[in-house]
Image 1 (tube, rainbow, N blue to C red):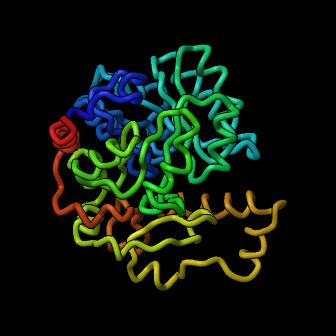
Image 2 (image 1 turned 90 degrees about the horizontal axis):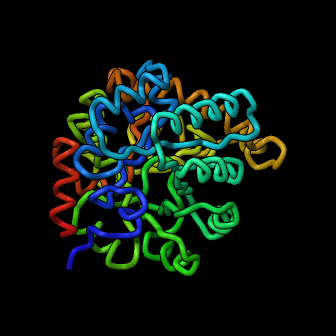
Length: 325
């Protein structure tokens, strides 16, 4: 039985129900294009494209399009409290639609402000969720699918295991994508057989030749096991999955004192999270691109346990295509 044809592939026009998760700072244009060209769905992360890889946004999109004629998607972080960022994001949406992007993955805020304009242009919107509460808000906003971030994910991990999260959300009537804990085709096959419409992977795609991070980052992923992954609040104010190392142990994983109080207070938590996020935007690129000489954080999920070599992004997609056939 083939598991290649799902609601995700039908909606997006891709051949393999595999999404390369959008990653700051790791989503360089060559990685995005390589995943899409092989039949999966490469995702543009606008902050990575412009701030880290130094592209004008429109020119960056056109460069990606010069590398592949297959569908690509775009990540939208919805920080409605920060007007300057919101203005820039609105401009990015307009440019992306003009350049032919039709799949958008929203995260953090309520997607209601962007869904109608994307739908009007013939696009589709999926939303990142970690539980039923946020899923119901996304459904009310009219999204077309949900990326279900489970407790094995890298980056901003959820708190629920993959199959439990599926059971929690299956009755909502939308295609669900499993995000977290996937590095092998057999794992993806099991999730799709259980009812998911596809899988999203980040860590597996960092350990590819098209992801131009420092070799130390690649080696850290290869050397790590699932038990080495820890959650820290020190990057964004909410739990982020990273590979445990001396830098993580030295800084600690929990906010304390005044920071803890500000993160818990409804009036100040968004501002405190933004403080952490701005600080991490300086730290993460240094670790990712300067390597272990700059002791810092390597984001990764528990799927590291199934990754033992760096291969091409296209080879990853083709292995999953074979495994799902």
